Amino acid sequence: MRAIRRLGLGDAAFPPLLAAIHDPPPQLFLRGGGEVELLAGPAVAVVGARSCSAYGRSVARSLGRELAAAGLVVVSGLARGIDGEAHRGALEAGGATVAVLGCGIDRDYPAAHAELARRIRERGLVVSEYEPGVEPAPWRFPARNRIIAGLCAATVVVEARERSGALITADFALEEGRDVLAVPGEITSALSAGTNALLRLGAAPVTRAEDVLELYGLVPEPAQTGPVGPVAAALLERLEEGALTADELVRAAGVDPAQASAALLELELAGRVAVADGVYRVAV
Amino acid sequence: MRAIRRLGLGDAAFPPLLAAIHDPPPQLFLRGGGEVELLAGPAVAVVGARSCSAYGRSVARSLGRELAAAGLVVVSGLARGIDGEAHRGALEAGGATVAVLGCGIDRDYPAAHAELARRIRERGLVVSEYEPGVEPAPWRFPARNRIIAGLCAATVVVEARERSGALITADFALEEGRDVLAVPGEITSALSAGTNALLRLGAAPVTRAEDVLELYGLVPEPAQTGPVGPVAAALLERLEEGALTADELVRAAGVDPAQASAALLELELAGRVAVADGVYRVAV
Image (cartoon, rainbow over all chains, first blue to last red; front, side, top):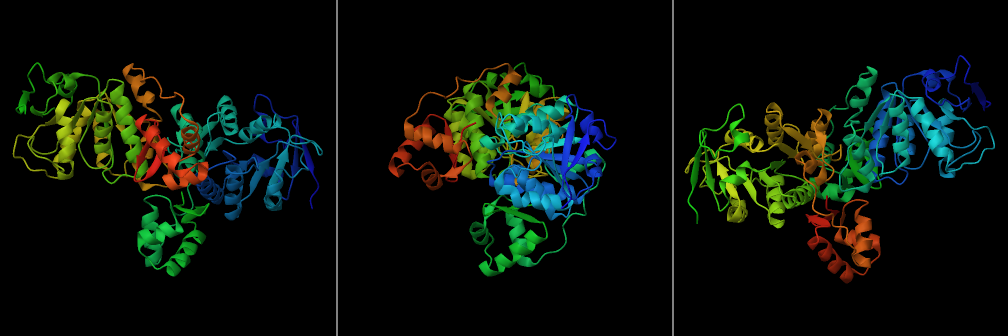
């Protein structure tokens, strides 16, 4: 295992975007197999609520995957919910992802994400301004959020309540003149109150990965629009009308349940649909 | 029953906002108990998909109710789906609403909305540029949409697919320099693709009735935030997390089913929740 590395603010390798913020960290600890250059590459923050909905989970995963596949480094906070799904999506795409901790660089926090952190460290990086041994503390998370926003040219908020920590990340990004984007959600869901409020304040809406990629002058991976089998096609058509559980989907599409299972797996592996909490949605 | 009235473009009573559009109708037929002045009052178009989702239906109803309660005339196209719900919401609030037809003023189209049209005519107006006897025809609906947009200072699109007729109404409004607003929805739903695309193009997001009312310098009816019983409060708290069926809600809130029924009815009558297709949501 590669040793923990340390970058000082004055070091040539210190990420330039992070060095440019109003209150940069004096040092950054790095852990993982990724090169330091990862932190200087085109990066996007994908953040949001810890207790998110199946919708948010599914969108975060799809966005993480598409943005990483197109060559962006996906930066997030390793938290439960949106953060974790964004990291997972990036890993699924075979991309590198960066997790910024709000505790000492040697800590596995949250414990439930120890295995995810290990996978991130294989080719990506876990980073923190806190030296080994520093305990997680609530007041360190806003500070951590300034690093997430600071490393990135743009911050995407996938799902957030009003007064959510993810909005603090968005505020940091705005203050530094970085782009802030938000994923629209139903106005009757408290979990989209923060993101919809960002839209009201002028954040750009993200309705597909391209909305983010064009800020970086990147083109998306060729769209996954190849032919699928007739059962998969019938399922896709229904899902475009809205999210459904597998049972609802089979009934609505009027297909054979066994064939539907195989077709859903095919669609999931092809990145055409995403499932979260048993609810299927078309991938974004 | 009051006779059909006719307004010529040059008449003093012809609605001024409609007279100001690029291609105003040469005449407008009026049917119903409402006064001509209704067409000159502060009016808002609330439009959207015919085959809408339960989300769209619920939001259209709530918005129609809140906007009418605050004193706006709610204008729509009497179509199935969003249009019909917007009219119904306005009627529920005891407000006047205006339906613009794409066929002769004497026609009941769509037939399924004959009773709704009758209720609209009690104190509101049904209007059309087409004289009695003119049949509905697909190409008349875009023409009708310019009248809906033309009568109003702002157009709100609640739910719309890409290339939806409601987007034509929004285009007319934009061309005339009127305000266009869109209700955000899930980016994985085809029914919100049109509305989210409007947001991308710069339409203002509507997350609550106030977002519309402030354009008119109006303040909303005092918020319905009075105390409710403990069961109702528990149900409201769950619904703020997202839409649920009555069964799901009872399970999630862990309340007695019989008490839940009474509490849901209480909340619905108080305008605190809206139900569509058996799915409950907090009212906007």
